[in-house]
Image (cartoon, rainbow over all chains, first blue to last red; front, top):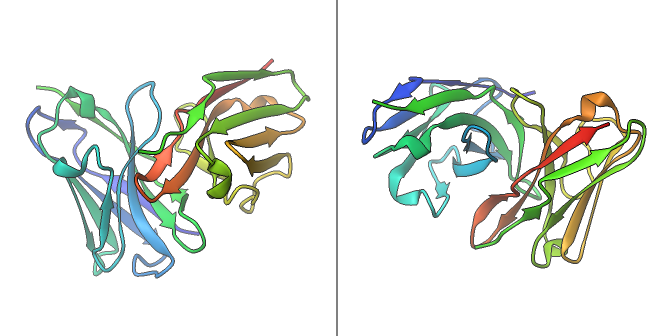
Length: 121
Length: 107
């Protein structure tokens, strides 16, 4: 059973870059059965997929966020990371990392506990 | 871009059957997945590929998908089933898409 844990600052200033890391503590990030994804949830709202990465570095992003997002992977540390540039208050959300099963279909079978990131000066 | 439509809320009496729907254009041709999110917790996968339950998910949870509607059915509803439920698909134009979520209340 995979285990994932998000880490990073809980407060980011407007116009700056939000940076989070997800550590896969049980299981290998180099698995061919998975992408590794970021999903966010603004307070009181629904889930929004941000993007995903394969261990090789191949990425896929939500078109609405694509111009501001970069997701990267470090297989030596079993980690993947999210950078979201030029943030505003609208980017305030709980950010989840998750394993994205890609065999036969694409769904998120294991999730981190989530981390709240607030954008405020 | 592909869109999924869910009712904002569904209510069910304790012990009865709840049905939560997810609408989308020809959604029956796609794999639909369902997540349960209790307050303050991360989402949990309860159904994948329309009808499949991950290990540890009670048999009371089932899914179906046909035409323009996918349905999550919760039989013998319990107080612990109160949560938000989200459907999700993968679409070639939008990649990962989530529905807006349905709040299930058990009366």
